Image (cartoon, rainbow over all chains, first blue to last red; front, side, top):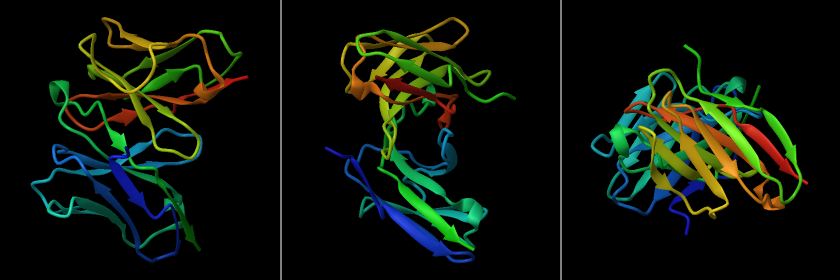
Length: 116
Length: 110
């Protein structure tokens, strides 16, 4: 049973537009929600993460919005650029040993294409 | 600082063979995790090691095993390879924060 559902599967956005990717989770014990960016042939790179005591977190052009009651969170990419074209994954986990997030449950990914 | 390094980058094996994948974490990171990423899917958790002990295991058969060494590097071993084991195997390390992934080992089983 998939614990993190991600949508859409693919997204095409014009340069300068806003890209929005959504995720929903089931396990209320999750307390850490990161977003990863992955380019072909590379490993996932941590973009931004949020904990459930915060409703929004912004880092540069990337913003996570978190709705604890709805068990949903989303990634907004402002002023999208062709270089943002990649696959984006949401994930969720509970605190692990030494405070490390070892067991991340990933969504299935969203392939973003930003057209010039 | 160097990121998470994995070796080899690519590997081709035959069904029934054994494979060992290696990972060096970011300096100072004591937690190492392994993930399997099948083409078109998100990574799936296999193992976490922290301070050289197994701290978590995903839903993978006993053919998969791992260990962590005193210098915190790690090995993932897969026995009796099946065609379905073909995937990108990712190693990630962390130190009280988010996971940092290497670029993976692309394993092809023929």
